[in-house]
Amino acid sequence: MNTETILIIGAAGNNGVATIDSLVKKETNATIRAAVRSSEKAAELKAKFPAIETVLIDLDKAETLTAAYEGVTKVFMIPGNVEQREQHAKNAIDAAVNAGSVKQFLFYSVFGAEYESILFGKQFRAGEKYLEQSGLNWTHLRTIFFQDNFFGWAEGVKQGGLYFGIREGSLAPLNVADIGEMAANVLTTSGHDNKAYNITGPELLTGEDMAKVFTDVTGKEVAYVSPTTEQTLESLLSTGWPEWQAKGMLELFEVFATNQAAVVSPDGEQLLGRPLTTLKDFVAANKAAFV
Ligand SMILES: NC(=O)c1ccc[n+]([C@@H]2O[C@H](COP(=O)([O-])OP(=O)(O)OC[C@H]3O[C@@H](n4cnc5c(N)ncnc54)[C@H](OP(=O)(O)O)[C@@H]3O)[C@@H](O)[C@H]2O)c1
Image 1: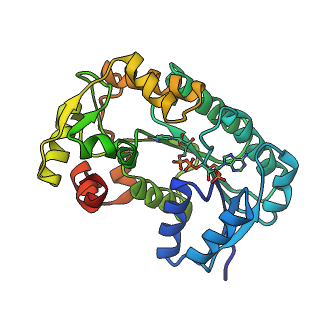
Image 2 (image 1 turned 120 degrees about the vertical axis):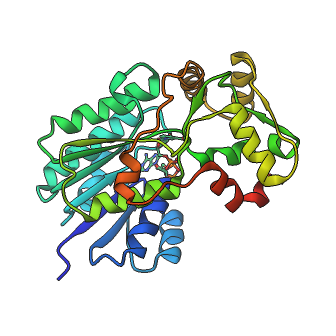
């Protein structure tokens, strides 16, 4: 008998889709309810995953969440790329408490959130703290920089340069499909209550190492170039990033540049029970985007 209803908030985004994909592949008996903010996104998801339910919400309007939570036993809340992430998280947590039926609340967060040292960390940690004090069973999935972000660097790569402003620093980029599978595992197994998982990719790479991956896979020389902070800011703003987010990204790059996140954590592999996807695997699987 199906007793679980899993509500995914932020379902139409990269991590939401990856999580639904993994849940569907698991053939879980649970009802999967995808919460999105437009009927177009709902229709897209329903076309891709016919077995799921969709529900419309707007995290800016707390009252829209009540109906979405009806009968919900598990929640995966993925705050979006918006400045009001903290309020969105609080609205989703309040609605879970009010629903009275939620046994597990999985919160999407960022690697290093506990240090509250940069804007992104502060935004997500505020959500984590609110959840920890809510009385709900909480789990934080703290993820680092995605391999998939490199689609945004593809034009440079095609022209022979990986323009990535982390100077001599290193980090372990993480695959979004892997994150979706980890989230699906957490949502369908027990033993995760009141735990924070710190998730990195499988290998520490410098900018030079990353450029070499692109060179090796594409067969064309890709040089590593670390632009100045000002150049990175200008480039992000010129491609339409809001100022708050571009400045947040610069703070994050500084963390990477100074090796403050130069760690490979075992948590992701433990959650998956298999090795994580390497950057080389990711670029090879998506080679057409980079040549
Ligand atoms: N890029 C990285 O390396 C990285 C690493 C760690 C964490 N993160 C952060 O992790 C989070 C998840 O990443 P992601 O790539 O999955 O994000 P994403 O693709 O932007 O997905 C976020 C989802 O939130 C939804 N959303 C935004 N505002 C909403 C509102 N008012 N009401 C309802 N839904 C709303 C968006 O809806 P629409 O589809 O309608 O826009 C989107 O589907 C983001 O906050 C991201 O910044 C990123």
